[in-house]
Structures are given as structure tokens and as C-alpha cells.
Image (cartoon, rainbow, N blue to C red; front, side, top):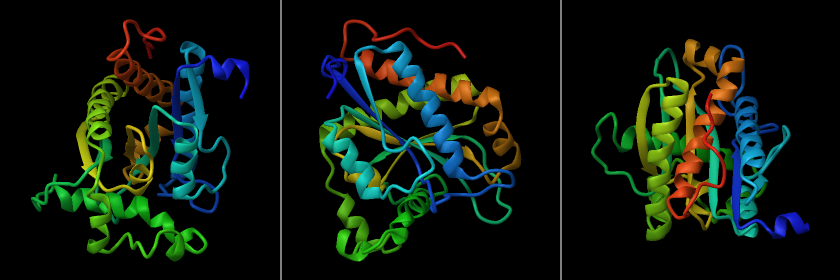
Length: 255
């Protein structure tokens, strides 16, 4: 560890979802893996420029495949204070949806309503399905099947403190990202996402928008979106860290 890193008192891990042969969701003109990397790096750059007390760790900075367990492992080994995973949403067929969502670890209320567990569980299945692309996934995940209802039991034991902090972070994400980007607020949700379950610190998974909806995909590919999303996520991060500090570690970003 460098002397500079040793002086930092807060460690943030930024996770760009998917990568390499795992493209994630695909739209008409782009792939999720490329968009998540772009926004993750833009957010990280803002933190590095404005927050001298924060050490930033990336799970990937290039187009490479990183296993789900390894993403959590990177955060755990870094003794991270916060984990933020960046993703892009999608719907099958010709279904259209717009908006920004934040997911934290937890068990969804099984209401069966459109905004309840049925919709949330589909996101969990899609994000966790990358497990199938890993070698020896059956041994490493001890038989976990992202499509099996029984496997959700694995995710029911959450740390109360981390969950409370994660929920608070999610609320900031919804407020500041929607404010910066003008995206529809689809709310903060809880679900059993593997990349959050295997990390031992507060964190969230953000779904920036729907790559399957043409105008949202076009927006996410614009230059303006890069700065606006980065500022929104940064301001949410600032609000979260300032809660337990006497002063902010950097100035609020203006998109």
C-alpha cells in the first residue's frame, strides 16, 4: 500500500457490472457492460478529484470478466466501507419502462404486486444469472441456482447494521441521481442480489435506466448523461458520508 493510500480513512469500492464475455443486457446500439464501465469510471474520477480522504477501488477498469464472488472478494479484502455496483436495466420483448432504481440486500415483501417481489425477483435472477458463465459454479456456489425459489433462503440472513446504512444510501441515490439526470424515480427496493450478499459492508446496486427502451438507451449513450449520472451518484455518496462526519470530504457536484 502506498503512503497516500495509507492516509485515507474511507474505502469505496466501485463495481462496473458485467464485462468481457458477459455482455449483460443489450440494446439497439449498445451493451450494458460498456455503459456500466463508462459511468463507474466517471463517478470514480469525481471521487478521486474531490475526496482526498477516500481510497477508490475498482472491481474492473477495462472490458474484462470478473466473477460475482470475486467482486465481493475485492471489496472484502479492501476492507471497504461502501460498495456500489453499477448496472443497466432491461425488459424482454417490446415492454417499455423508464427510470432509475436502487437495490439493497434484503428480502422482498411477497405481495405479488407489480412493484413487489415478482418484479424485483426478475431483476435478482437476471443479475445473478452471470453465475452460469463461471467455471465450476456448482462447487463454488454450493449448488446455488439463481432460478430456484429455494435458493432465496440463502439471502435471508442479512446484517442489520449494513442493511440500515444501505437503505439510507439507496434513498440518497434515488434523490440525487433522479435530480441530476431527470430520470423517473422508480424507488429503492430490497432483494437477494448475490454480489451484495457476499460483500460484508453497506452497499447498493443501481440500475441507471432501461437499455431496452430506445430513448433511455440514447440518453445513456449521450455525453451529457455521463456527467449527469456521475454527479448524481457522487452527490448521493457525499450525502451518505456526511451523515457520519462533521464536514463533507469534498464539494457537491453540479452537473
